[in-house]
Length: 433
Ligand SMILES: Cc1cc2nc3c(=O)[nH]c(=O)nc-3n(C[C@H](O)[C@H](O)[C@H](O)COP(=O)(O)O)c2cc1C
Image (cartoon, rainbow, N blue to C red):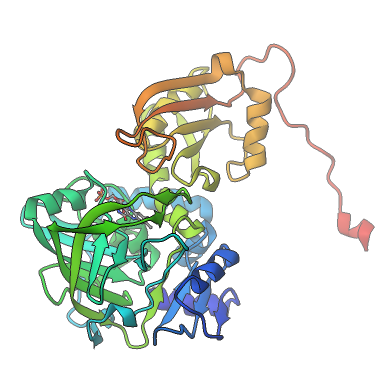
């Protein structure tokens, strides 16, 4: 299903807010997206552009599960299957994303200015596709700050595959694809081995059509809404930032490579996909692909892992809650080490028993309050390589202290019981009517 087909489906289910009044792309659209939190929205009238803008379309796991036609609980296994069983997308000759060619004037596009201190207008939902003779195709996200009518400065985290490709190729063609469905979005957010095309993971999540890009030899999602093709140059630099990061704090200003746009194509009546930086959708897309990698490492360590959640309170990146069926006394601690293996940027891991609802922060805190003793159940790992996104980690090296909380109850109970008591059930409706 394409991005626009899902928007139509949401509207049919009365799960879409249509805003007909004129809205500015400067601070106004982002304010509305933020206030709506996880409610999908379509802006029909953007003051500075002829294009519609949509946001929050995949802002919850439930919205993504509904898209794939599975339950929220089934998402982790679906992701794991796709990562382990990538398959080739179908190549088509004519693609909706190339129906219309636009003049190269970025001011005409609804590229939002999100927050007051931002360095500029930003594309934040752009899936960037690059190629290399040796490694093939790479697909990932890079925020793009508009610096002129035809140029962006692009945030490239050091060491990422994009960075490796760029250092090797110096000048490199890029296709920035906007208006994607979650198979492409989630695949773009996975970290795979160098040389693995993430669009094959996308195809395994849901069948995907690809088409040849117009200006270079890359295969891009045929059904996306906009494609901005251009050349990124390692040696041409421009300031990028400040910009709000995943942690809802401001990222610093850096000199980043410049992307010059050479061609813009889109669908007829194309819909722009906005993504609020630090918002729920950003968090979901970052965190979801790490849940299966943690799950797998915990299973590989011989633990009966039941579920994993990267909690929104932990920026869906720094905190993992792992639910296990504990069989041996040491399982909780083994799970902590395995979880850190499965997601290297994670800072705090909480391991809970199968009676804890890992989507309910109160329930997790209850386990911390009733099943945890800091002197024996806490693992502290000093001087670890942490996340570059964590404002409390060392700004130069990202070194951090990691912590594991074993919140599982002991197998051998010596004193009080650890079970939550069951209250009697009733038919409340009968008494209230
Ligand atoms: C919404 C979103 C925005 C992102 N923005 C950036 C970015 O601006 N720069 C960057 O290097 N990585 C960004 N990432 C993370 C990359 O997608 C990440 O590097 C990728 O998952 C790893 O790909 P790789 O294994 O091919 O290096 C973003 C991820 C998401 C989900």
